[in-house]
Structure formats: structure tokens, C-alpha cells
Length: 333
Ligand code: 3PG
Image (cartoon, rainbow, N blue to C red; front, side, top):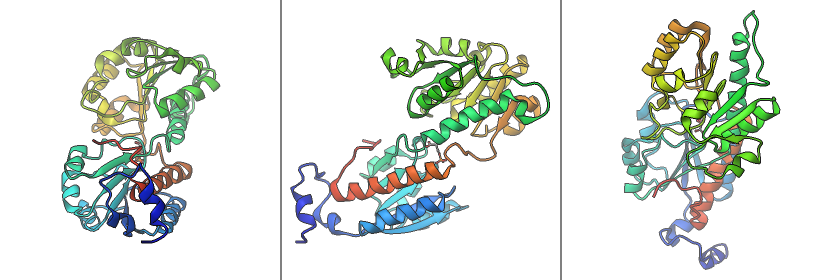
């Protein structure tokens, strides 16, 4: 028995499902990113994984899911971004033990399929939040200043910034909004303690209806779930004050596109700015001109800093899982 293994064997927190063989084995970690990490992040992932005796394979900018199916075949661990891990991918990954979504939202991973195979799924909460929060504020300024075209714009100072869901990103948007002199309010169905908001100088509101009815800028930070999909549409948009903008750095699926389009048609003052192009992006652009903007490709987390934070956290979580069975950031049962 190697000296390195002895202390691990004594650790009471070792998950009983990790057997001794897996503790000794070098694992293959596949980094599969259609939208690649910055080189610095990939180098850091390698350093962490190889330093723990594992190997790293890289599949970047793939254009066909067949490439992912092939690459994942002998991978023990998988690091992804918004890459889709479908039942087909799980089925092709015969050796897979853990998937880490380097980022916050894990709606791209079929949790049921992973759980059915006993595969652990984790995310890296908070690691890319600052990048997303900065983009949300940037998008507000961009819209306030006529998308940087000539003409009189407006300022964020004094406007009401309404934050829908006060998690890692929502909170940072709130704090930054306060620094810009905005009146910040927030709603989060899972946070009942007003002190959580008050410590940031943010006022808690008690309903989605109140949030939208008060919002000059509505910043979306809800995940895409069965409950939230298509939940933002005509009624909420119509309730917003004159000149209001919905800012989406969350997920396109939470928008009822038909309903929002109808509201923006009836109300020529409403704006929609999003980091995730809607299905009907062309129609939005054609109908609403400067009142609509979508980034060409989701770029909320596209900073070197966020790539390094999330990528390295993912690598550390995998190494730790294989060494000790630590499941702290597990999101499936
Ligand atoms: C997230 O959920 O962390 C963000 O949407 C970032 O996604 P990305 O890694 O695909 O840029």
C-alpha cells in the first residue's frame, strides 16, 4: 500500500462508493468545450489534473455531436460549459463517473440520465458570476446610450434596477447597480430574510408583479427550470414603467417570446437586451430595431478571469472527488 493512500483510507468522509481501486487509478478527464476556455484556464486545468496523476484530453470548438460522443467514450470525468450532456452522451460515456459544469446553470445536463448511471454532476457556483454581472450592467449602459449611436441617451443613476433572483450573479448586479447610484430592488422566491438584501442596500419586494411594475431595468437571473420556462411574457412586460428594459443574462428559455413580442409591439417604449439570442432573433431585430439587441454568441462568462476561476474550480472538484469522494457541489441525487 502506498504511503499516499494511507491517510485517505483513514478519512471518515470518504464516500463508500469510491473503491480503493479508483483511488489508485489515473483518471482521464475530458474537457469538452464547444466554446473554448482561455488558454490560461486550459493550462491551469492540466496542471491541477496532471499534478494529481490524471490525464487531460481536450475537445474544443467541436461542430458535431458525433465528435463529443467519440471523445467521451473512455473519459472518467468530463468538464463542460454550456455543452449538452444528453442521454446519448451519457450512454456513449461508458467510464464516466463525474461531470462538472464549469459555470452556474446546469440545465444543459440531463440529470436523470446521469443519476440513473450513478454519475455525479456538479457545477462551480459563483466562479463566473462577476463576469456575467459586469456584462448585465454593460448592456444596460449600452441600451441607455442608444446602442452607442448618435442621439440623446439617459443615465442609470436614479433609475430603478429590479433583480429577478438574488443568487451569486443577481447579488453582484445589485451591488454594482448601487455603486452607480441606482435604486435597487430584488425578488427571490427562495430568500425570505430581508436582511440578505438589506446588507447590500437592496430593498426586498414580495412578488414578481411588484418587481416588474417598478423596474426601469429588469435584470434576469433565474435558472431555466420547468417552472420558469416561458414565465416572462406579455403581462409582466406590459406592467413595466415607460421606457423599461428587460436585460437577460440568464437563459433564453425563461422568455415567452411570443408574449414579449406582442408587448413590445403594443408598447413602443419597451426594450429587450439579451446575451442569449431568442429563437425568433431575426423577427425581434426586424420588428424592434434599436429597442432589441442580442449578443452574437453568449458572452456573459467570456472573460479570462471567469474561465480561469470556473475551469480551475472544476478541475479541483474532480481531483478532490476522486481523492476523497467530496460531493460538496453535487447538483443531482
Ligand atoms: C453559466 O451558467 O455559468 C453561464 O451561462 C455561462 O455559460 P458558458 O460557460 O456557456 O459561457
